[in-house]
Image 1 (cartoon, one colour):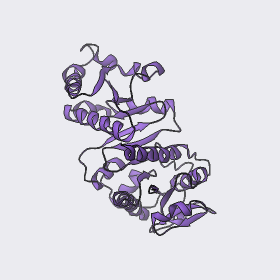
Image 2 (cartoon, rainbow, N blue to C red):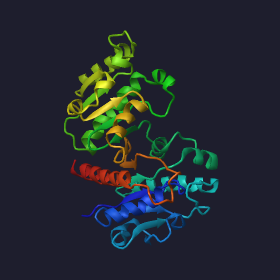
Image 3 (cartoon, rainbow, N blue to C red):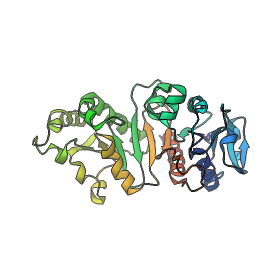
Image 4 (cartoon, rainbow, N blue to C red):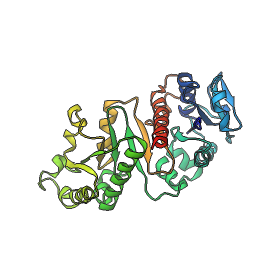
Length: 325
């Protein structure tokens, strides 16, 4: 029995999302069927878009052009210049994508990049980002953001907050929940039978026995010991500056990091173009390219579709892993 196609949301129409969707279809064609939810007016001029009325039409349409499930926006779009009138449309497309994947009409959700300030200014968007909005739509209390490429998977426990706020935000419950969600997702969505998890410290040298900070001793280590008692294979807390060279990466399946840049700098250094953002802990599969709207190059035809293509491929692999499990 054939799988349902992947739903791809358009993201901010003034960004690179719509043009990258077409480039991804040019690369993948009907080999990996996906459909774009968006407004045909926002696609680059001359694009071969095939309008569909139902996701079930995707496979046939993908042989001839980019399958498009139309969603009318309030206004036209100018590359690089978001307009407030389209903000609600961006939000509504995300919600529509969630409905389709929850109903089974789509097998997974891949999301085009959004511009959070444009959504806040234009529609009063009340969420820090995609991840939190998706958790709200799915009625899930806690989700986890993973960044993944061929060489590395990383999970930042705290995400889009100031570095000064990290120590107070980093609680035992938050750390434990992130590790449990990650452990379960590696088994269910990535086919890792016995996940090996490496956990970074928060301070230089992982605190160096308390000389450079006590968080490792007082908070992180006790949580890790508790989780080892639950049967989770964990190493750490480890000095973050020695975790990401090639030899170290062979010893684990995912690195749990304490804050945003501790996780994202190594993966973007290793493979800037192919990183994929994955939301763990949702009742459905969600991936996204690991880049933003790129207003500065939108409409110029130079944006690379590599990360979006990898996001679609990873979503497809995750669908297969869940089906096999």
